[in-house]
Length: 377
Ligand SMILES: Cc1ncc(COP(=O)(O)O)c(C=O)c1O
Image (cartoon, rainbow, N blue to C red; front, side, top):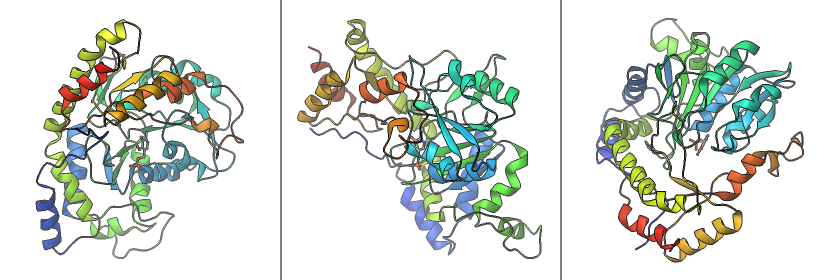
């Protein structure tokens, strides 16, 4: 039996809602389904303002425009992340300063963060790896003391939370000034390609809407706030069609069931692999006390690259697709020459040693567990 790494889960209502959107005669963006999805996020998570985008990459690009960084500015981004977390800012002409991961988790190491700040630093981009919160109290404290903006890359972090020192449990994506989510088919909630920009800081709301709609004040016109609309700022076509939003709505209606199933699978993997970790053969993911686990990903950490490569190859022979994750961005072909030369050993270790196990709604989890355990007998 082949077990793919990922299989997009369909709730069954996606095509019904797409048909509804088509029948309504309005299939471009910012229609009924777009508004329903945006309202859902604002109501459920208390996000101040939500705008659906065609991808998380686009949401990050909007965030980069909103922060007004450009040549001469610096943006701090972990090196162990997807290209878009850095690229969105590099496109503006800003320089990305790569941060290392914690030793026990791929998330940004907040202990070292302050040493990376210079008078040119404008933005910090924490990435909530595997949907597990970065230490947001530490990050917001540093940002506030240095007058920096925080853009949460919450691509993987839907329905996950952070409990701060004040004891308040806040949804990821609601803490930074801006945040970006992904609905790419590999995420918990999907629309093929898709994303969401969250604007928590009131100052950015009006401009975000304009950037979203190709630099025009079209949204204000349709709300009757101005009597004509035109070109008022920079922007692009960042909004998805109603067809994408209709698909997403079917997923959002089932968010709790999807999350529960993924958590059950994650817990089963954890419980089954704990004895292997206790033998010191691999490490299991950690979830700090301040974070929740949204079961976006289950990963193992091998002691070295050779052991990970061997594991992936053996699983592939059994037709179970396990995959490694990011290559370090600071040593990528595109950025190697622009990086300041600092070693980022924790990032390198996650790049070499981390492997993700299949995790999707319809995963035959007992078979997957059995095949993984077989590698350690
Ligand atoms: C941390 C992170 N940021 C950004 C992205 C980009 O998301 P999208 O594919 O929706 O543009 C991804 C994609 O996997 C990601 O993992």
